[in-house]
Amino acid sequence: MLLINETSEVLWESFDNPTDTLLPGMKLGLDRMKGLNRILTSWKAKDDPGIGNCSFILNTNSSSPELFLYKGNILWWRSGHWNGIGWSGIPTSSSNDSVMNFNLFNNQHETSTSGRLRYPDVSLLSRLVVNGSGSIQRFVSEISDQEWDILGTVPLDRCDNYGRCGAFGKCQVQNGTEFECTCLPGFEPRSPSEWSARNATSGCVKKHGRASICKSGEEFVKVENVKLPDGSFARVDEKLSLKECEQKCLENCSCTAYGGVDVKEEVGCMRWYGELMDTRVLDGGQNLYVRVDTFELDHFKGFFANKRRQAIMILALVVTSLLIFLCVHCLIKRKRKGMCNWLINQDVHVNYKSDTTLIID
Image (cartoon, rainbow, N blue to C red; front, side, top):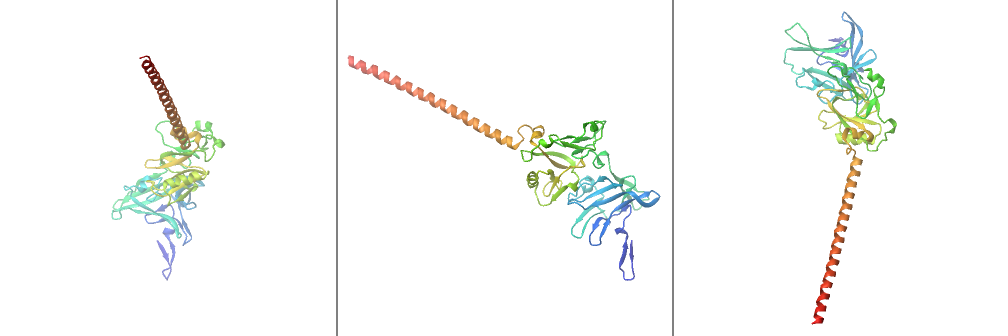
């Protein structure tokens, strides 16, 4: 809807002032040219369109924009970073089976996102709604139908709740009664008593604390199939390879982990400095490479995993092999020398006897 004056100047546009609903083609995020930051806000109640308690925004305050759902002042859910074709924490957003095609626009004019129907020729309607209960739902309906069907909802489960397992924690929905929180490699619960009571909000800390010495042989342990941590604490380099990313991270003692921007890890690098927050196991997720000090590396990669240790062991094997070779060589040489002396002595003795015999004759 547009409101224009007599000279056809647009005075007001409904797409620039969304309420609780996002339609195909609408944008969410910052428009620097217009000075607008478009956000969705839930209704106060089902029958009250006043401003509610929940808001859905595109976080533009970091080098890795993400969609955030707030419940009051509490960060309730996040989408994961943009992986080039969709939001990494919503695998269906980059699937060919998705109803929508999503885009991220990040330039000097705007940092915004929008979605359009993947097959516009199909007689289908779609809308996304923020609810006051703290959830986001996508509805679809055929034009000829009067009913709206729920296509998807977030948060989806306990692990979708932001920071469920605290800093340096990893969440994985379990079957049965097993606790869903564990610590990332090289970390342990900050408060074991709280964890035993199934409260992991205090997160995890390094097992060796200050005993860990930077640049003393630490390496990275791969954590597979996860939604990568909150990008607010990350730095993005879109041109670095994964190997270059690893080297950059090793050079900075504050770098706690790294990962690829895209699922294939072909190009683009994310490096985290500080806490790793809101990591969860996810089907279709990505690999996270967590910095682990030399004290803990053996536990995850085995005794010979450490490169410095590998070099020492290889050198020790080479030196040992060389010493053994020299010893064997010396023994053989000494044995041969002894044999030669014996043969010479025998030859002299024989000649002596022969000479003596000749003299007697």
